Length: 326
Image 1 (tube, rainbow, N blue to C red):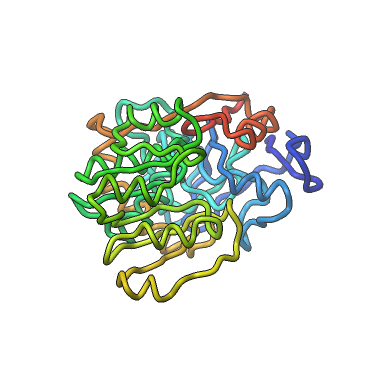
Image 2: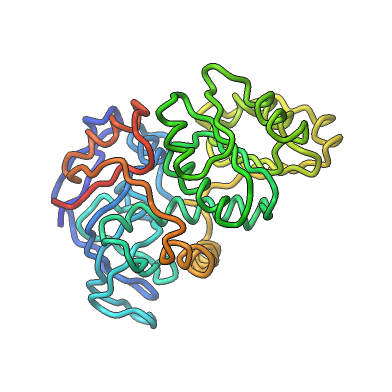
């Protein structure tokens, strides 16, 4: 098969479409013939040499894919050769074939084409696990989403609105904020021109955000604590703004607030299986019913993954960038 390899870490040009051995499914695994994968910022870090795959994972980038089941390994039940699926991966999505634990498979939702489904696994699992399973967002509460026009952000807006929450978002342009509004965002904040703490407080009569979904890390830590409501929850899922910040514990105590930080890729298989099962139970009906949809910015041939990485680095996209197998 062919896959995107990284012979040496570097810029987008470090991604090489090369011939590699076919993977073989082991106990509890299936082999997928890949139709499409999606680009995540973790892939950019891996390409630069800053984010190695977990032990035992495929060395190729790609944290999600869609395709058809080509082969079933020992001990797998409930799936058949030819099934159209999408999957949460620890790596290997940038390839013509990939092996995945059966517990990380999802059926393609009704009404969605096979390639579009590649935009779902990482964002749905990240948002559901962090915003709902950890931070316990409830109807009537306010969610602040940083990077509202990203793949994660566009899914977080829709899921929060679907459960009856109010949504505030930050983004860097008027056009991106307009697209967030079209998905249901209630409070639109241009982080280049406005203070999100002031804007969220004004929109909530001074109360603040009950849950903050943060991809920035250190840069926003102090303001994220300040924007929290009493009993608020800060869920950190990224560190685009740095890894070390100063935390005002007094402010945290005064608000009886909580901070969680979780990545998805390195979680044990049993945790991923539980998250995928929860997503299938709670999110898949919303997609099938037309209440939630993947937002796809563009599709790019997988052998031109370098172009897709440049798109993400330039941050001009809204939603997900897909890589389709040529």
